Image 1 (tube, rainbow, N blue to C red):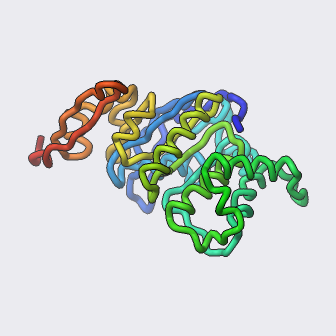
Image 2 (cartoon, rainbow, N blue to C red):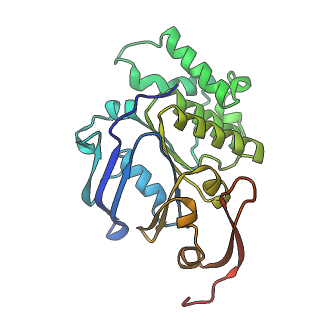
Image 3 (cartoon, helix red, strand yellow):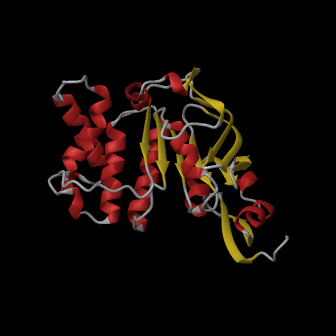
Length: 268
């Protein structure tokens, strides 16, 4: 289910304001192929807004976003959906579609206006459900699912889109530890096949363990961008999260482990 490798996404000095309030300020980032990027930062840092900009759900106030060297504004929504798939934060569905139908919606970007799904489209949707451990839910209405079950079904829909870049906003939200690990390890396996993934995460433990690159946002600005050991420092955690923390290295897996100790005194 891997998408073809592409030239990636180039974010050039992008700013965003809404109703006169600044959300993002002069963001400069490049997202290449075969990357698993963790987008971290406290609530209100701008993580979700940045992902929405990359999906054309919001429009930059200033700056430019290029996909494969072409300005994002020049991409049709259908063409963009063939390259980039998006899983929003806390998604909900009000209509009682069967889970199988919802996953199959991920194939719409690959169909003509009046074209019906082929046997291959059904195979792709079925494989996406298998990989997200949702096959047993195929005939159940999505309105009857728990939050975690719905999250996995919508992730299956995202995978069925077969895009070369995935934008995932809190993909492990509402999941128990077993399914959290299952989702993160699935995402990591997709990167090995050439897909790029940018996922917003609150869980610094998962971010540090699985992401080779972390982007730390604070008040709409990039504070740090690099390997987990370079980003998750005591100074950065104090500045961004307002906590005193101890950073240790996991003895066998060798990723930085953050242990919050206390709230940082004001002004530090």
